[in-house]
Length: 82
Image (cartoon, rainbow, N blue to C red; front, side):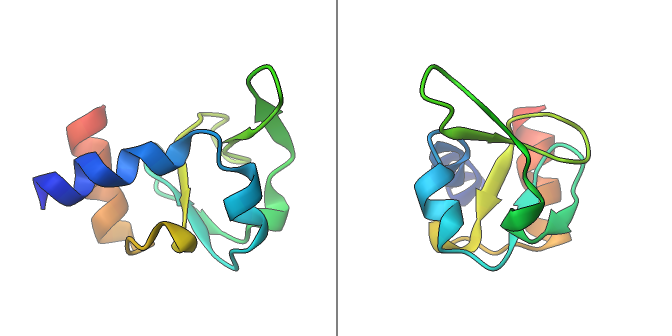
């Protein structure tokens, strides 16, 4: 699973366009799972990276990443990256 956790990380940045297509996303910092329409803040010079509406960390991946948006997978990402 470590390879998946590493590969999924690239989807937490510059993700505004991909999240527009998703109906589900999750934060691998606070482990919340939610609809991308809840995202209100974006960072980076072109405001293209989502901040979690629950913890304000830029650790959101969406279902279009191809990785599971589950508490289990997000928890594995949290263990590896934090």
